[in-house]
Image: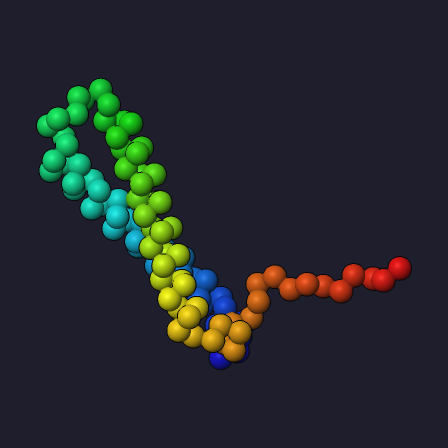
Length: 94
């Protein structure tokens, strides 16, 4: 496989990983909310709590993604296997 295919597969895999982590953290936070906070919080604030749990799940997934990505970059020589996403193009000299 060449570098471009490796790059595309990495982006797809990383996106899938990030989505799975976001869904898992959302489900865990919802379970914890239902188990411990549901009897305490009034019913009128369910919408706000759901929104906060959703935002927290996204924040957790970004945090976990960054940690895993740093580990991956330290473990593997990225320049050897992946193509750069953004390439500087030579501008015409005037």
